[in-house]
Image (cartoon, rainbow, N blue to C red; front, side, top):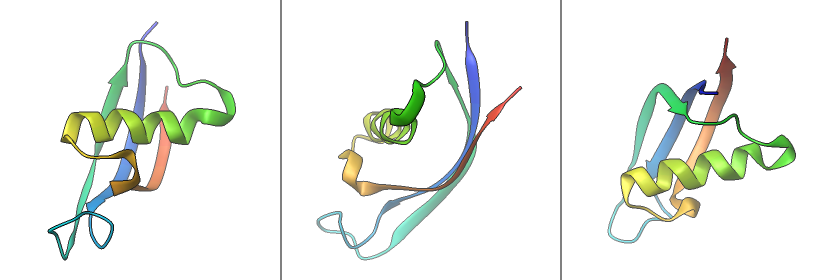
Length: 68
């Protein structure tokens, strides 16, 4: 069952080598399965990092919510 999440997050910034400014993003992410329990934030960061070709430490989630 697919699950949709609204996300508002930053990429880059001080933690990303070679970048001085963070980039702000927001939008809807659709996953094949809902995120699981207490690891939701970590899973979402990993997924976003994979799609932006970054390390998960380079993603800072400001807000997220599951859409119904």
